[in-house]
Image 1 (spheres, helix red, strand yellow):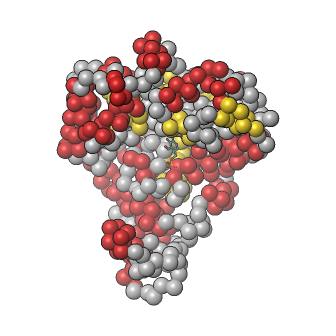
Image 2: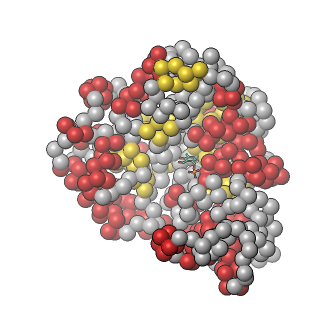
Image 3: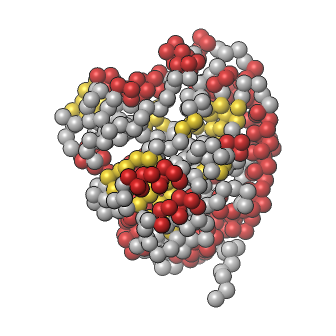
Length: 496
Ligand SMILES: Cc1ncc(COP(=O)(O)O)c(C=O)c1O
């Protein structure tokens, strides 16, 4: 059978056909294609968007049970990504990770996953009543950056925990490193386990030979892509792909129905459909352009005294089997700033907003939406930042932090002991105690500095003094903590 043309956009076309039909709409949403919406928003976002903000009526298919143009669009996506099945997601890779893990695991199953897994994986552990066995990702202490897990770590962990049913891996990381997925696939499948990949940061990998290999291309059983993060999907629009026979598609579909709204935003689905068409038909050329811009930025940033921008030079270091060159990690610690300070200055003084700040770095994304002008703005802003006298009075973090930064003794604490499963700890009664006096207690919350979203404490884990000190330092340095009810961590919920 001839392959269908990747130039087609069946779902976007179905939405447009409905608009063109002039049908009198007596269905949700209540704004009725914009007519009932206040001018203030309507004029700004425009009637075209509102005209396809529809519900799943006749002809527009049902995301939770697709049989028409959504199914056709998802089949085209599977072909474009080299998958057997692709699913459109309207609640980001968050829903994808949750559905992937819940499909693969039964209650009490053990799963191997890196400690730097996104919190959506932690929430999946809570919902699936499974037992996490954390693998330590490689850490570059100089740059204060976590990389991927190595095949050796996966192999050793499987030797120690042969009962594990699946291996969950994050690749690329927030900082652009990719795992050696081919070697990991051989180890994992060699032992009859499932390989699940959080490829939220890699929706573009499949479309360019100079980018690291995609999870579908190495035969991972399932992977998620945040199409909205680095491609032209709209926010929340993501995909889940599966390859091979090991994932039960029926169970996956039922699980997705748990996590997806019964009123999905159809504009997001249209953006996935058109984005797939764009990548399948011109992705390589677009990414060639983005890579050229990213390489130029990296070279120019590395010429600025005191600034380091990691890149393919990292390949071969532990946990860096490959590197996504479109990720621009700018290490500012030798300028005397924390990443948080740099982020603030770049935004407030130079009108440049980066994606992420951490203690030592800021991360900027170069995508197919960038131009020579936009990257000039980034490079110029960092040049100015490097030229400034360090504004100690306004921006200086605490003396403690400075001393630690200078000593280089700012280390992510070791993974705490798991006392009860995340689900048990999350659902049980709790008491609130002062965080600084909570050493020895069993945590009932997730505590995640965000970004990058790596939990430092998970429900069920024993709180240590080291963890307390680390998190208090992150707070002093201005990081946002997500997860705990008290975001400032004055108090924390622990098991009684
Ligand atoms: C590694 C990783 N996985 C999953 C997610 C969740 O993706 P989404 O924002 O599309 O729900 C993120 C979000 O930042 C992430 O960094």
